Amino acid sequence: MIPKVTSQWILESAIGSKGLKLVHNVSIPQLAEHDVLMKVHAVALNSRDNQIANGKYMFKSKGAVIPCSDCAGEIKAVGSKVSRFQPGSRAASTFHPRWHYGRLSSRDQLSQLGVLEDGVLKQYAVFHEDSLVALPGNVNFLEGCTLPGAAVTAWSALFGSNRPCKPGDIVLIQGSGGVSLFACQFAHAAGATVIATTGALGGEREQRLRALGAKEVVSYRDPKWGSKVKNLTPSGRGVDFIIETSGAGDQDARCLAVGGQIAAIGGNGASGGNVFDMRAIVGEVRKITVGNREQFEEMNRAIEGCKIRPVVDEKTFGWTEARAAFDYAESGKMWGKVVIRVADGNDAIQGKL
Ligand SMILES: NC(=O)c1ccc[n+]([C@@H]2O[C@H](COP(=O)([O-])OP(=O)(O)OC[C@H]3O[C@@H](n4cnc5c(N)ncnc54)[C@H](OP(=O)(O)O)[C@@H]3O)[C@@H](O)[C@H]2O)c1
Image 1 (tube, protein in one colour):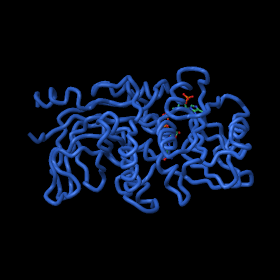
Image 2 (cartoon, protein in one colour):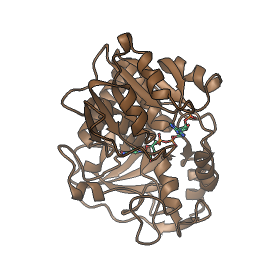
Image 3 (tube, rainbow, N blue to C red):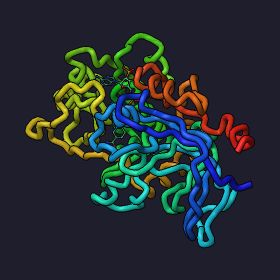
Image 4 (cartoon, rainbow, N blue to C red):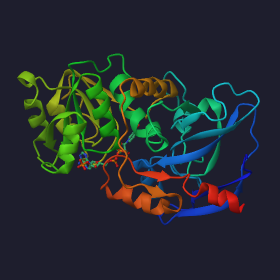
């Protein structure tokens, strides 16, 4: 049966997770020719979702907005001219719904779910077919919902330039957040050597980083970690790729190989050094804004081909626990992605309507 109404969370005001409110009985719009209706099974959080909830993101929502950009689910109905999906297809959202391929334009940048446009924290969602991708066959919904933001960012950082990551390259990942763990898995699968930093050297996080493919792990609390990383590379030549999620431009300059690449992604730790001093770097800095649909589809083929399983934190959250999920993601205690099981209770709620 095709539902006519959905429940959804809205971010009413930017006061953190307390600004989230669960709303029921919201009408689902009629499908246009190229629209599909997705039963959302799972939604993953990115650090950006808490930044938006706290009014600290680069863009501010104009008013109440449905949060989150990353979901996976099953297509339940399709418009008359849909060709990319059919009822029963498994699909994921794209972070920039209108950026399909090529270079990022300002229009593409502003098409961004969960802040300037309503996001995906809802039980049923209508999408234009062009804004979704098919899930890789080897991932379930809980894993698949983690792909649109963190995974595509890591993929485009490693493989999105004219000189992509190759076997034998050395890749530095910073911290064990969502983007870093995907970058670790992708770089390892590509035959690169991974060096990781973490704030929790000597503990379970270090062991898990090694199990995921990191050959060396260094503490980012060491004020000279950049030089330490460089010294770990053969003949001290430095690293070929820096997956820059921490904003430590000064340390990056100490460990980048001549001709290497820095993928400028985030500011976890916000050391203030994220404006790179190009006089100190004989290499390339690329600004990453997640990635486009073509890169997402390319990545999904690699995930399937290399049998990569996204890392989901062992603690997942039910549909009514979105606030707790936001708080947990903000705590930084997770290992892997924080996921909300949207389909939990879906049928029960549908039954009541
Ligand atoms: N430009 C883009 O397209 C894009 C896309 C996605 C994300 N981002 C940004 O990239 C950053 C990472 O995102 P995420 O989703 O991966 O974050 P996340 O999952 O929330 O990252 C949490 C991790 O950050 C690490 N961390 C904390 N302080 C650090 C420091 N001083 N140096 C290095 N790592 C530190 C911690 O690692 P340990 O526990 O190991 O210490 C922690 O586990 C964020 O700033 C986010 O806004 C940008």
